[in-house]
Image (cartoon, rainbow, N blue to C red):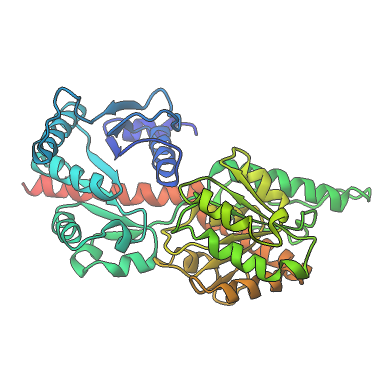
Length: 424
């Protein structure tokens, strides 16, 4: 983005982001994208993390990076001592950086940010990035969170269900802001749309009709236009899921559902993308199935967008999710999607009640999942229309749109702080 007038307008404003690390993950990608956006808008941006991970998202060199964890020499056997040492170190960082506002992501980080910054009078915007009942697990932790969130300048949540979880005094300062689309998937979706449009118009000499190919430079109104002739028909008869393999992501449910119908549709395969603690056990289970040769494990891969562009059906079988990036990305890639209707309501916020852009099934209901798979496998037209409709989320979840919502919310925090300073 061109900084232009934004730099002049915001040159005195400083924003600090705080998270545990920048390892490859959904929350980490979101906070990095936000840091890049605010930097492009002319803010002085600092990224503070507890640790430096071996494999991280890269940041613009103009964004200052600070590691906040205490050193081994500072650490003792006392957890209480270490806690206060970490808070003290964060205080020193905030005094050095002098941010106008701090944006913190996830569980303990949110509490540490408030505990260290509130005594300094620095407003903190905290963000809960998963289902609150999961992120705030434990009565004691939940109680402390509710108490400290009173001191937060703002609270960012991902879904309407998450918003309703909190008491009124927290909801009064809270806002629901969904995840934006990964720009890499926008680019791949654009490429796919161009290919399909070329296939449609290539046989004639007519000038191809304008296609709304979404990318990171178009505005929101342009993104709303979806050419009905862009159809994603050249797809393999493949079902995929993406995510770390563990109990919560619940790939076992999907495997069981696929196994129920695999014998009826021998041309269809299942691909599990990702790695995790539950992979070995799941592979052992798959090895006992008659359809084992049509179920593959890819591990963690870098070409997820390309794989989504080639497969036909995407499934999110999770037990709990916030705003699931993998589901958003599959919808952007024009896939026919099935998801569990899991707390805290992210899939329900994305998939329409009339199932025009996806299908919701109950959590852990293998039979319902099998029926949904069968419904899509046997209906080419439904898969295509569902995928075309799914892509329309580009209009509301485009990075330009969501980033501006974040900016408006943060600017409101600046405004409130300014009024309080005037009164003080």
